[in-house]
Length: 148
Image (cartoon, rainbow, N blue to C red; front, side):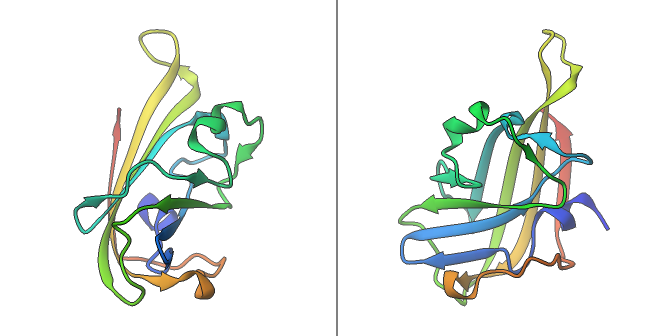
């Protein structure tokens, strides 16, 4: 199983009106502080959904203030308010990018090491009323993990 299969799920994208929610797992081998999340970007069928309205219940600019951790066992809900939301039942291609700042290993400037995770997943859009289950499912995806 690749890291991509632990981050994206075929049933992880749901919609309700003009709001989309993508359930994602942490693309790292150990839990990290939420403050390590530098950015999340989602593209559906070639359309960028823009800045998330929330990541795990916090605005993206509030993550750096959180002192709790994103567990490797926890799915995070990333919400988008956009006019580019697909319709429930549509088959789409989901491209996810997560930028992390890993504490511990230092980059050349002495700060946390930047790390970018990218993956693409075919998915069928669900409805918020039939949200994804909490159990992981195996997915067919192509993950590209590279340093930022």
